[in-house]
Length: 334
Image (cartoon, rainbow, N blue to C red; front, side, top):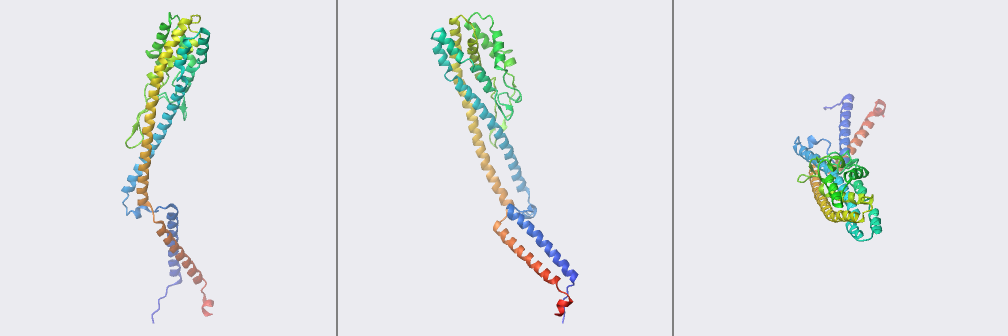
């Protein structure tokens, strides 16, 4: 009769190897069941890693697009809110001043005085910031786009000093805002350069180019400045010139209000394009995530079944090992 005898040492080593193998597989299966992904991608893909690399590159690009889209959305929204605030301040101002110009001097002065702060309000709105960055300064996001309202009004008082008529007064202010050496030098403090266009999706690029020195914005500021100077005493004692100056500014402000609406419409159009780009990004991200899950994902039912099998095998091994370790001569002779 032939006997197959496995020594105690060999049996112990075999048991340890089996135990270590089962523990390793148990740990792997537990991790895969918890994450839903394979732990060894190289083995699961048989070394074909190119598809995973491609998906990861595409997801990284989507992350970059999402960051650009988020920053752009914040800036455009902030610009829109600022323009909305200015529009609300001036929407009825032009007609109201024209009506006041046809009234008596006392009523006219009262109406003008009640709107004296509209210029400083517009300057404040255009100096709005988001996340510490000025939104109407071009690339100079750390610099306020405009000088202080009082400083600009003080300079305009000097510029208009000695004006012979309301028309002359208005023309000097118009020149300061639109000719070199005036507003562009001491009024607008932002950058003439705009930030580069931003890729917000694989097919959409948005360029936020609106600054506080845009012609439409300057025209509104100009007329509000004129009304502020009238309220501060321009042509004081000459009601006719005061009314003529205010009427000219009010008429121009009505046209400027319409231009400002068009500027807001352009900003709104950019926000709409941005919204569509974000929806496209979300769709692409979903598709890429599904592809990544197909490559790296595990069958949770199959994994759970195998996990239970390994647990039972490990428990059985522990039970056998425990029984074997209690065998000795005394137990054998019983």
